[in-house]
Image (spheres, rainbow, N blue to C red):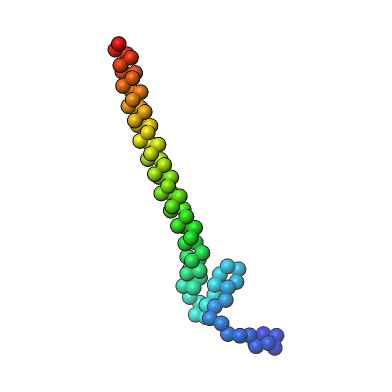
Length: 79
């Protein structure tokens, strides 16, 4: 009872971003956070995998170019 009004009973209440349960457990709050963050983490994983592939492709091209340039420089030095 609050201000002569009977408040309904609930299993949890969310206030200022925190989820309070009847037994003051953190499990509901943590599950809510994981559910809201999970899609963002998936996007970051995909982006990082894509960037890693791009990095290795660039690295491979750079190594090939360096090897080719070294051969040309080496040939020019001794001709």
